[in-house]
Each structure stands twice: as C-alpha cells, then as structure tokens.
Image (cartoon, rainbow, N blue to C red):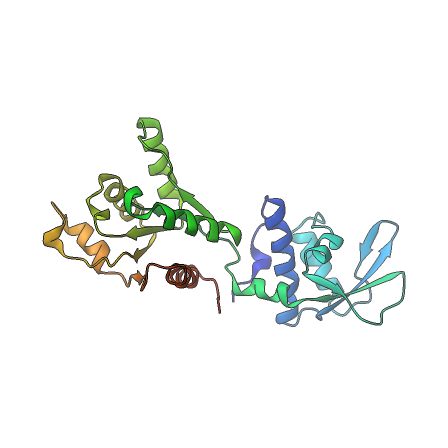
Length: 253
C-alpha cells in the first residue's frame, strides 16, 4: 500500500475531501493514530492535543496540507466520519472513521486518466457508458465526440493520449479498419502508456479479415490479455466495466 501522505494535495474540491479522508484512514490502518479521532474545538480552530497520535496527525496536516485541510463537518456529511456513540462533551468531537473512508484505500491514491478509443459505428453507446462509470468514481475519462476533427483537434487528441495513464480500446468487428482508432493506438504505443483492449460484439482477431493490418497493430491486439464482453447485454457490459476497474487498480466485488 503506497503512503498517500507523501502525495501533494489535489486541487479539485471533491478530490481534496477524498484525499484527506484517505490520509486519515491510512494513518489509522498503519497505527499512526486510532480509528476514533478526538478533536478539541477551540474558538473556531481544531486541536488534536491529548489524542493518541495527535502530534503525528497534526504534523501530517501541517506538512502536507499546510493547515488548509477540508472541513471536518464536510467529511462527516459525506460519510467518511461519524459521531462516536455515547460521546457527550460539547468541547470535544469524537469522530469514528467509517468503512467508506477505509474503502478509499482500495483505490489508487491518484486517480488514473483514461483515453477511450472506439469506433463510432460499433461502440458509441459502450464508450459513453464506460465514460460515465469511470467518471462517477473520480477517474478522468476522455471520449472523443467530434465527427470530423481538424488539425487543431487532431493535435489535441494526440496530446491527450500522450498525457493519459491508459488507453482503453473498444474493439468490435470493423473497429480496427478505422484510421482514427489505428492512429490513437499508435500514439499510445509511441507514448508508452498503459493499454487495455476490450473485445465485444463477438470480435475475434483474424488478420486476413483486416485490410492492410500492420504488425504493430496485430501485436497490440494479440499480445495483451483482452477483456471480453461475453454477452451484449447490460450484465455483460457491467462485468466488463468491473474487470476494467480491477485493471486500473480499483477493488470491486
């Protein structure tokens, strides 16, 4: 498990809350402080004085967050902290780290960015479904919706692929004929980013059925363990999405 305390705080407000909750959960898991936080409320400020591990937590907040950490009440409202039953001292907050906070440790500390490459005729609905699924858990997913990109958009796509953590290529019969898909795959290979292919709609690779199939494209399709959609149904797409999340470092049931 990587130490999230060594990572800089994110800028996005929602990601900041998740990151701080993850920091608290990590510290509890490795024994830096307990799962119940004892926080003194002192004239609109908070203090961890007297709490086991309180000095360590204060140091993390100062060194990483520069004392500008997300509001504790916001973490409680979003379900990462809960009041300890039976605590009645109005001067002190007793807050328990919840299961939701510890589940953040089952995700990458830094959400990956994903470029979804697909053929519009074959995979538009599937691509949009994956974009929605990934975005809902904080993964930065990009789907090209342009119909006829000009030179500026072409350069933008190339840059976006190169800056992504992964290229996810949705492959159905006819997809690999697309010059746009081939180009995006080539960019990913050149940039040496991670790549994952998802086969659907009964795709099976047969080189003689793909006109002018270059060797690098064959290697891309056949040398990696593909995720296969067993059935073109809601359940089949759901299972493929879960497998993709596993490949991206997310633990799923």
